[in-house]
Image (cartoon, rainbow, N blue to C red):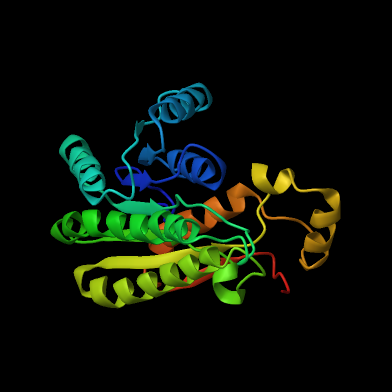
Length: 251
């Protein structure tokens, strides 16, 4: 069997309605997986599902919109998936927010928001699926980190702090869950050409591009491909890794 064939596998992707998450959903669908995407609102989930139905007719894709910071809501959603599909093989914790406020303008509420969605929500997802994965003999958990988890950034300190936490959670769970056949890894994207980056002024984009040896911004599909690889049997002996997908950026 092709090592990148996910036929018969059930994949859950949070933040799956746009950007990196949507590309990740697409990448797994194209390799035969059944995918359940999570979004923040029912209408954004419905829009993503309609788009996928048009581009990938017949693909097995479903959607949900639990509040990811609500542990009970996440657990209920995961339980519903297991009841419907029988298993969860891969969880991609991709939902998150970025921040860029100066510390002089930063508030405790801003910090809490970053920690809630970028850390607590990731924990909630991991906590909800691990019993199922252990019972079925294994699984894969993948978390979205960031290049700033390795370098920090000049403002918006809660964002890199939250991604440092994601790395720590990833490495710790990899050690704990390895005996249960559950691999846990993270992907640390660099500057990725999503809507947010595309909207940056050219004066800001130009120095960013100059710092990347490959002389291009990453595409959402570059990050999606990394998730697919880490979820596949080709990465069967990789756990506790934080894979940089950043074009070799020099910070």
